[in-house]
Amino acid sequence: MLSARSRVLNMPYNTIQLAQEDRVAIITLNRPDKRNAISFELIDDLLQAFDEIERADALVVILTGAGNAFCAGLDLESLKGLLGRTHEQNLQDSARVAKLFRRIYDFPRPTIAAVNGAAIAGGTGLATMCDFTLAVPEAKFGYTEVRIGFVPAIVSSFLVMQVGHKIARDLLLTGRLFDAAEAHRIGLVNEVVAADKLIGRAREVAATLLENSPSSVRLTKRLINGFISQQLDLQLSQAVEDNARIRTTNDFREGITSFLEKRKPKWSGT
Image 1 (cartoon, rainbow, N blue to C red):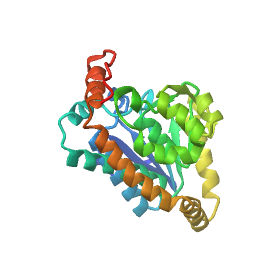
Image 2: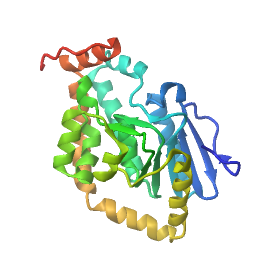
Image 3: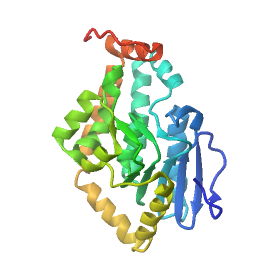
Image 4: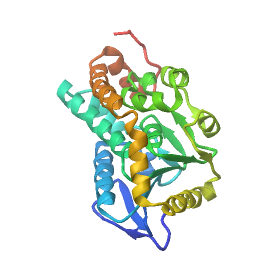
C-alpha cells in the first residue's frame, strides 16, 4: 500500500504500519494473516498512531488494510478472553473501543477509509468513523454483533445519525452482511472504486483536501461534529454500560462459545 515516496513515521507498532507521503499519513492495519482483526494491541496502536499524526505535519489520514481484508472484527483470541473478564474489565474494554471510535470521528484532520476487502463488525465501525469511505466492489460490511450475543452499542451512536433510524434498525437488528453497492446507496460509502485504483483514488481525495486551508478544514469539521457532540457524549456513556452489561448474560456466553465452536447458537434469551 505504501509508495516509494513514503517514509515510515515510527517503528514500534506491531499491528499497524504508519507512514507519511507528502502531507498524507497512511495507516495500514497490518495483520493480514488474521484478516486485520481487532485485538487490544491494535486498538492501542491505532490510538498511539493518531496521537503521533496529530503531532506531525500530515494534514490528511488514509486508513486501509494489508492483504485481502480491511478488518474482520474482533480476533479469536480476544473473543476467548472476553468470557472470563470481570464487569470492571468489561467496562474498561468498552471504554477503550469508544475512545478509539470517538478519536477517529473527532480527529481534527480529515480521514479517508480505503476499504480494500471485508470490513465486519468492528471493521465496519472503523470505516463508519472516517470522514470519507471508499470501498472496492468486493467489500463486505456488516454490524454482526447480535449474531454472536453482542450489542452494537458503541457504533450505533454514530450509525443512527449517519443513516437514520429505519436503515440502522435493519442493519443492527438483523446483523446481516451487505455489499459495497448497498453501503454506497445508504450513504455509508462515498464511492465504490476498483481494487487497483483504490489507494490512488484515496490519494486524489486527499489531494483535493490539501488544496484547502488547513485551518478552515479543521474548523469546519469541528463545526459539523459540534451539532451532535453533546448528544454523542450521553449516548456513548450509555453505550459503554450496555456493552459491558451484555457480557454478563447467558446469551453472550453462548454466542461466543458457539462462534468459537463453529456451531449454531442455542439462545435462552437470558
